[in-house]
Amino acid sequence: MVKSMTGYGQAHFSHDDFSIEVEIRSVNHRFFECNNMKLPRRFIYLEDAIRKKVRDKVQRGKLDIYINVEGNHLITKKLEVNWSFLEHYLQTAQSISDYAKISSSLNLQQLMNNDQIVTLQETTEEILGLEDSLLQTVEKACVQLDQMRQKEGFSIEQHFQELLMSLNQSIEKIDDLSPDMVQQQKVKFQKRVEELMNVEHNLDEARLFTEIGIMADKCDISEEISRLRSHHKQFVDSLQSQSPIGRKLDFLVQELNREANTLGAKATDIQIKQQVVLLKSLIEKTKEQVQNIE
Image 1 (tube, rainbow, N blue to C red):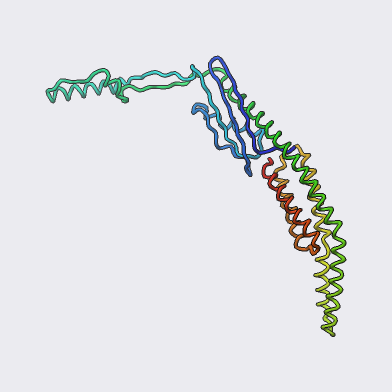
Image 2: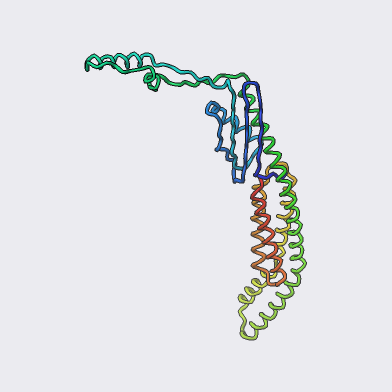
């Protein structure tokens, strides 16, 4: 199955006491990366559990996760007084007043505004089922993300089918043209042997065999064609796999490109050279699509 690495998933959960909103975005990446996770501080301890939920659906890709939890009863706020510090503060103020023979001008507002005396404390309330609801909402967002990645993957697969058909046609065209190239090389080879025999009366046998070897190697592109067909077939077969295939397809594209380069270096026929240019263009387009595959 072809899955894109690009996708988006969202899920929402509402309760009488709280609501949960989860968004997950994924983009292309060589590996699985889920480091950008934004969620309320009190739920940081759930990061590993959330990451595991995502990993069950995603094998490759860089993910951003945003989680928001709201509720009137989630946080309780109250003012707390540091009584021991207040007592010490007042005693010190009185001592200074007595020593300096001046009256104290302290008032209630000054004491309330002193953050060493009065502090605002926030406490989180434990709400039954909140943790489970959050993880379930993450899972729903993951399912939606996976569905979008599959949908994108289907579109990419359709494009693959078109490219693979054109690739196969180009390979077969090169195979059809190869006998003509062999014949052309044979004529050149005969001409080269005649030139050597005319120039050198005592022709070095070793040199002759070297020339024969070079010309024969240039004539034979059957191995390259065979390997191109093999890689093409493996690519087609891989599209039917239910496992992630991105890495395998990336390898096969590299192998296709390697054989196309070798073929281009060997080709002497102008029509074959033109087909090789087309072949490499198709492989490059295929490579661009493979970069999007999980």
